[in-house]
Amino acid sequence: MLKQHLQFKLSQKLSPQQIQLMKLIQLPTQAFEQRLKQELEENPALEGGKEEHDSDYDSDLDNSTDDFNDNETINTEDINVDEYLSDDEIPDYRTQVNNYSSDDDEKTIPYAAGTSFTQHLINQLNTYRLSDEERDIAEFLVGSVDESGYIRRSLSDITDDLAFTQNVYTDEEKVESVLNIVHQLDPAGVGARSLQECLSIQLHRKEKTADCELAISIIDNAFDQFTKKHYKKLLQKFDITEEQLKDAISEIEHLNPKPGGSYAGNNRIVEHVVPDFAIKIVDGELELTLNGRNAPELHVSREYNNMLKGYKDSKEKSSSQKDAVIFIKQKLDAAKWFIEAIKQRQQTLFVTMSAIMHYQSEYFLTGDERTLKPMILKDIADEISMDVSTVSRVANSKYVDTPYGTKLIKEFFSESMKNDQGEDVSTREIKKILETVIDEEDKRKPLTDETLAGILKEKGYPIARRTVAKYREQLDIPVARLRKKI
Image 1 (cartoon, rainbow, N blue to C red):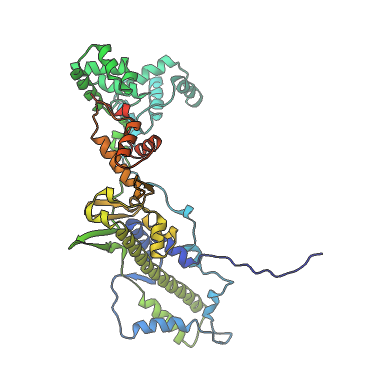
Image 2 (image 1 turned 90 degrees about the horizontal axis):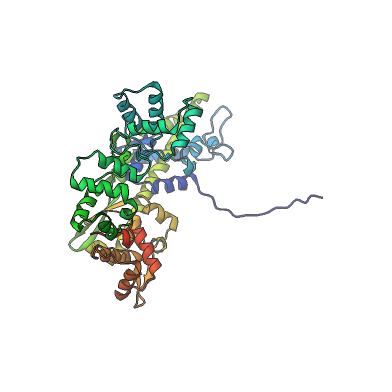
């Protein structure tokens, strides 16, 4: 037998206003401006710029909208404006403007308009006299070139695909002969199947000097020793001096390992960084300012408020007037919510960045990264009595203009480690010292990770060799063998 019973349950839900605020907080300045422009276009009740104030306008704005929230008894022929605010009917602005998933965010990256890299290569093929079969093979090879300029597939696979997809029956020898034609296209090195072949193609197209001839021999006959920087073996193999080897390596270092990246039509648009904050030192004190583009002047449209007030004063209310007043009321509420969200966004950004600035005040005064304190999101969240997720949204993709350059805010956050005196130090401090030690090392005999760990220990930072290797990789510094120079 089924039993009926009541159950009370507490649950937390974000209101549309909170969702809107969180999404605005995480936007950097440029994205925020786009969002603001979109809202101004979609909501005619929201206006930008300075507003001309009347003495009674502000009070009329509040009173006119408050009057519609009163519970009043009206005739059946009249219109109850409160109907659209009931729980049974959700206004459009709650479902269309605020309440959408982060998965719906636009993630596409704009590309520069113009001729594509593939079309650029095909245009060059038009200058060669080729048979129909050779042209089909050449265009297929060009279509197989990736964005770096390489063909990453074997000739046997390409031969099979030509037969199955292009109805071109040929052999690997024919494909390779056409590939040699593709290797003559610009940029030099395009269509190579490996880095060795790419460098060799570029060297063979250069003026044949003694250094270039030696560089060709090194790439063609001793590529493995070259990549592993076994310079002693190269000196013995080619019976040359260190100066000759140095000149040949200089020739190789001036080559382009990714020929496809040199084509302008294949490059992506680089986004211009706009600092969200600015920190200045005035009379020895730090001064924080929020980018003025984050503080737009917005106000509710007076015309829309007058329409709502005119509906209230009218004696006869038609069905079309009801539909119009519901639309007006929705847009007015949405405009008020958006203005309030903008104000809260400004306050949250400023309070959070101010706490970060004071927490890392020694760094902002000196510019020395070794003075950065260990700082995690929770430290700032506790300081300003906000949630960690809010601090994360503020720090994400936002920049601050400092006397030492424009910095990404999240770079100021780092974990802590204890030095030999038991004090907490930032991992950024250790990485900076590690980077300095490697920059000052003898490049003929680079320091191994074990040696670097010993040096850091002498400086008061007892960390393991594997930790040194991790920090070195995070700094994008290669191993000692690959840092070696002659």
